[in-house]
Image (cartoon, rainbow, N blue to C red; front, side):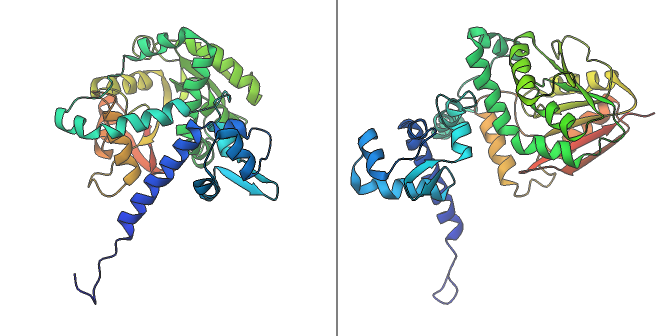
Length: 336
C-alpha cells in the first residue's frame, strides 16, 4: 500500500458496525425496551426513568435503534416498529428472543469449536427435540416463531416465484405450524396443502391456520418423516430441511418424497446452498457455520451434492434457482 494507492478499510469497518448494531439490539432486548414501548410512545426522558439509564448514552442508543429499523421516532418520542413489536417483545407470542440470545452464546465460542471440531450444544434427534416441546403451548409458539422468522422471505418467494399452475396439491414435509403452506395456498387458490409433522405440532398448526384463515385449505397429517410414508401428492416441499441432517437422512427424505409423488410430480427443497466453486455467498457460509456449532451432522451443502442426492433418489431432471436472501430452490422432476 502507498499513500497514493490506499487500501479501503470499508469492508472491515462495515463488519465492526454490524457487530455494534447487533450488540445494541441485544442490549435493548435485555432492557425489555420493546415491551416497555408496546402500544405506546415515550420520550427519551421517560424511557430513561423507566429503565434507569444514564443520560449520556441514551439519546444515541435510541436513535441507533431507529437507524437500524427497530424503533420509530415521532414528535412525542419513541415507539416500536412492526418488526420489533412482532419479534423482540418478550410478551409477544411470535418473539424470537431466545434464539437471538442463543446466537450470541454460540458465536462467542466459535474458537473452541474450530479447535475441537465438535458442536457446542449437540442437537437431539428430531423426535426427541419435538417431544421436549410438550412443556406447553408457549414453547411451541416460540419454536415456530423462530422457524417463521428464519423463513419469512423464503415463504413469500416460494409462493410467488415458483409456478404452481400445474400442481393441485402438495405436502409440506416437516411443515410445523403450516406457515409456508398457508403462503402458497393464499397466493395460489387452486392449490391444497397437507402439513406432515409430528403430533405435537398439531395444536400450533391449528392455531396458525385459524389466525391466517386457511382452515380447509391446509390439513394436517401426523407422521414421522423417517418412519412413515408421506401422503400422495403432486409436489413435496422440504423447507430448510437439507441442512439439519446427515447425508443418509437427507437421502431417505428425498427417496420418501419420490415414492409419494404422482408421475410428473416435483420435489422442492428450499434452503441455503453453497455454489460448487464455494464463492462468496456470505449468508450461506454464516448459516453453515451456525448449524455446525449446534449439530454434528448439519451443514449447508454444495449445490452439486444436492443434485447428486436427488438423482440418487430417482429424480430424472434437477434444476436449481435463486430464491431469497441467499437461499436457493432445488427442483427435482419425477418422470411422467
